[in-house]
Structures are given as structure tokens and as C-alpha cells.
Image (tube, rainbow, N blue to C red; front, side, top):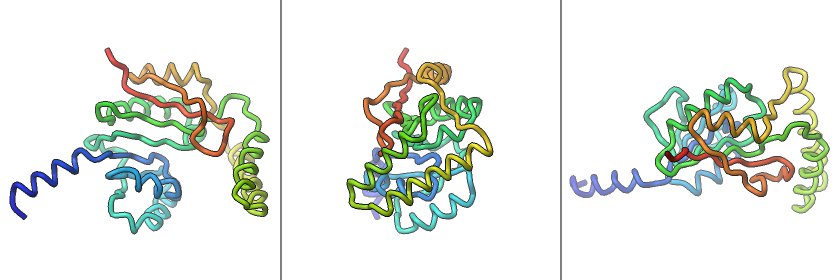
Amino acid sequence: MCDGCSQEKTSSLEHLIQALDFGCGYGITSRPLANQVGRLWVWDQAERMRMFARRHLADRPNVNEWNDTDSTTHFDIIWVNSVVQYMCEPSLATRLVQFASLLRPGGCVVLSDLIPPDHPFRKDALSLLWFSLRRGYLMRAFVRTRAVANQYTDQKTKASLYTPSAKRLTELASAAGLVVRWLNDNLSHFRHRRTAILTRATS
């Protein structure tokens, strides 16, 4: 390949949308996300989840595993789906500072599936049932609803879910140099949860 062609290819890659799926779990939502961006990095705190994600995404050449100590790779989108509730406040505050430093100009952090304070499980159960029934998954609806119930029960035996208020999340984001915009609708099928878009504050 000639030098000119090589430089042109490198330049085009640099302008592709680069995204991070932070807390990717099994990599289920990573697959459709990988179809929408140029390059996708995935990371999960649990080694077991990272192993599953590697297997699940092995056929996607534009997916890479991220090292959470990497400060050189920057992103247009940092996707944090259904993760915040399993964090503690100091950890979230630290991560928000890190995310702010990793954003490309004009980039954003998407915190989806945020659970409001005093959020009753029955709302999630109804959302999940409605989502599954609309797609004709009658038996799967009950199985998945039970799985979510068990997940909540297991988590509550270990520690309480973290459910920051909108005011508190705004304060944490502000301390990290980020501003918060709330979407009218959550991005997942849990209709009573919330999604926040965080961008760098402008001076």
C-alpha cells in the first residue's frame, strides 16, 4: 500500500465513531452497538463476564477489549447501561471524572436504566411482561420476570442497590465537569427507569 493510501485510511479510521460499552456483561447489547459505530471497546468488572463477551463478540472485527486503566483511547460515546445501581457513590464519582477525561470533543456519556429512589420492583416486572408479551413471548415473559425478581433478591442480600436522585447525580456530574440532560423516555424496555446524557460543561 502506498504511503498516501495508508495515510488516507488512517485518517478515515480516526474519524469513525468510537464507543465504549462500560459494564458490557455478556456483550448482548454490544452486538447491536457494534453495528452502529466504527470501533467499539467493551469492558466489565467481572472477569467471567469479560470471558463471555469475548466469545459472544469474537466475530466482530471492530470490537476490542478495553483496559480500564487506559487513558489514551478517547470515545464519542461511553455507554453505561444498567450498571450504576451496582456501584457505590464514591466509585461512580471516580468513574465520572474518568469518563469526562476520555470523551472526545462533542462526546457524551449515556447512563441508562437508572433506578429512581424508592423504585418498586413491580414496575420493572410490568415493563418486562409488557415488552415480552408484545413480542409473543408468553412463557419467556414469566421466566424473564422471575429472573429479574431473583436478581433483585440476590443483590439485596449482598448490598442495597444504588439509586441516586436526579439532584444528586447532577451534583456528581458537575463535580466531574459534566452537565446532565434527561431523556423523556428510558432507552431500555424498563419504562419507569431513566436515562441521562452527560456532556462536558462549556466554559
